[in-house]
Structure formats: C-alpha cells, structure tokens
Image 1 (tube, rainbow, N blue to C red):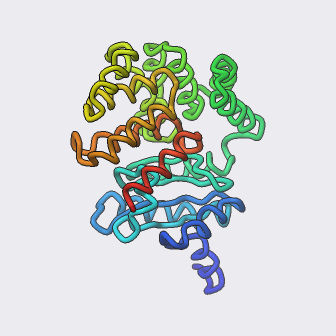
Image 2 (image 1 turned 90 degrees about the horizontal axis):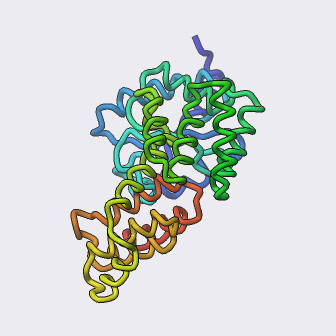
Length: 299
C-alpha cells in the first residue's frame, strides 16, 4: 500500500489542464519527459474505460512519462486547433512537439506497450536514431533514402508500426498506391489508429482522391471564372496537395472556410483536418494551417 508521501508523488504524474495552463503543463513539461494528453469528456463512455488504464500505466512508469487530462467540453480551443474530431484521443508530446498518439479505448496491455515504445524501453537507441533519420529524410523529400531506412528497421522488427507507416508514406509519395495499401494491411488492427499509420492512411486517401480529379489547369480555370464555385475550389485544393503544393492547397480551403463555413457540411474544415493528419503535426503547412484555421474559428 502506498504511504502518504508515495501517494503524493504518484499524483504528480497525473493532472488536469486548461487552455490557459496547456503550454506550461504540456509543452514546457514535455521537454523534461514525455507527456501524454488525454482528450476526454464526461459523456464519453470509452473515455471512462481508457483513463483508469492510462493513469495506472503512467503511475507505474514512476516519472518516465506524465499524464495530462483535458476536458474538451470545458476547453475546446486546443483540441479544435489540433483537429481532434473523436475521443478518447491521446497525443504524446516530446520536446515540445506532438510525437505519437492513438484514438479509442485501448486495453491496458496496449497502453503499456505504447508507453514502453514512447519511453524507448522497447526501441533501442540505434533503432530510435534510425527512425528519426528516416522521418527526417521523408520530411526533406528524400523518399528513396527514407524508404531504405524504414526497410532496415523492418528487417530487424517486422512489427515496427512506425516504420510500416513511414514506408507506406514513401510509397504514396512515389505514386505506388498499391504497395502503400499492402504495407498498411500489415499493421495489426489494434494499432491502426497510431499516428504514423493514421498519417499514411490519410495520405493514401488523399492521393486516391486526387487521381479522380481533372487536370490542374482546368480546375484553376473554373475557380478563376467563378470564385464562389466552392466545389471547384475544393477539388483544386485536393489536386494541389496531390502535386505536393501544400501551402497552395491550404490557401484554397481556408478561402472556403472564410466565405462559407457551413458549405458541404463543414467540408472544407474537415478536409483541412485530413491534410493535417497526412502532413504530420510538425509540418510547416500543418502549423500554419492550424494557426489560420484557429484564428477564423475562434475569432
């Protein structure tokens, strides 16, 4: 049984946060150790299943990771800016940035496995360095180099979910959509909501959307001829993203949100969120897009 001093120490690993204290509780604290943010609401049944498992696993980690809980009903701004659309959603912050995450009420064993991976207990230093190098290569546009590094990791551990998601992204970037689908099919069902896999899946869906659109020049002409043709502008955004023109795609969707937030059942904002998922939380276009979207929605 925990003594009072031990109980107090354990409680410091779990706390609630607000919009005002988020930077201190999460961003700054994550520079010392990983911080999990549990986005929840009182009406959410699966949240009530997940939170106790999260708290138990975090307390058992004894300071290697902390848990911060945010009630999205009381504090909607930050989850809105981050594109959180369903709960429970858990985002892990490391060194001030979102690093990993999952959605849904995972069983306790998978929560523990997630924490182990996050605190590098299961991924050795060399493998962790390879993952960082692969992610950096992909972000810099070196698709071949990134694919080679992900393949090296998978040769050592075929179940490395982060590497599977990264390799699928490489296939999407090179237009090899069938190989991307086959790679994503290798991810276990229980791990398909993890951030690297969700990003790859979103990128694949966007690439498939772009394939079904007309030539870019035709879409640009349609928008020029009728700036209020939101469907043409929406299609242009998807096509631009398919060509790697992220900022230009962002501009088109922001224009729709500014002019008619409710168009197509909030379709422009939803498409932006899918872009953010595909681009990743630290991409320049994601950061800029979330900032601009937040300024519109919360003005």
